[in-house]
Amino acid sequence: MDERWWEVGDRIYVRRHESFDLNAGLVVGDEGCLVVDTRMSHRQGRDLAEAVRSVTALPWTVVNTHAHFDHFFGNAVFLPADIWGHVRCAEAAAATGEAQRREWLHEGPEELAEVEITPPGRTFTDAVTLDLGGRPVHLRHLGRGHTDNDIVVEVPGAGVVFAGDLVEEGAPPQFGGAFPLEWPDTLARLLDLPGETVVPGHGAVVDREFVRRQHADHVAAAGILTTGGDTARMPFPAETVTEIVARIAELRAAGQA
Image 1: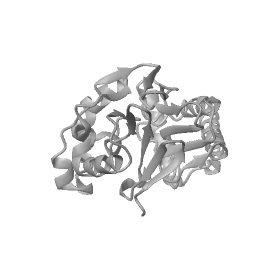
Image 2 (image 1 turned 90 degrees about the vertical axis):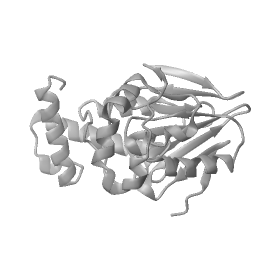
Image 3 (image 1 turned 120 degrees about the horizontal axis):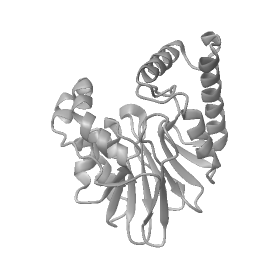
Image 4 (image 1 turned 30 degrees about the vertical axis):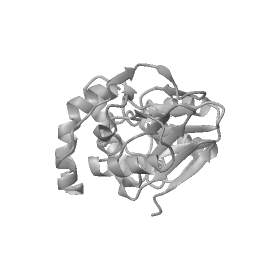
């Protein structure tokens, strides 16, 4: 995979990586830049930091779209920068970081063993605006979906939204730890935001029509599961359906669905 920056808007870049097919983002203002997600290890984080410096020498701020290791284990490399995330992202990163490390050690034992788990130090609940110098960037929590701490990064006036794993390209959405019955409404709020270019957490950059289709799939799946319909008609592969059914059962047992 060609791991170089692609400019998807005015001074807005995406770097797609072979590891986990993960997208990292970069938004450049007049006085600073914003790095969207930091990859799965210090080594990968350093690679990303060097790539950022190939574009700009401006001071960086970091945002984590959610608290899954492949999106935030590179955080320590960017210190002492401000690292932003939803308040529950910071809590989940601190509470589950070590468990995630153990679960995924097979992906790179040395890389993951050396990670200093660094949760976001700057948090918000609903929305916050960062000023990169002549360029505001909105961080928004639109609801629960892939996790309970997903956020999107909206660059107003540029037509670009970084959606994290609320949108998945190239593979089915991942429902372990997700909120399948709430995800459709969260995606509907994403579609209410302006902009034609949507950067998913993984896979190719997509447009609004792709997000509309994925939203329709989530709506159909939620409808089948809440009405006791035929799961053979679900718009996702059988293994994904099994994951969704198990997750809803887990949420119902906990009184959360």
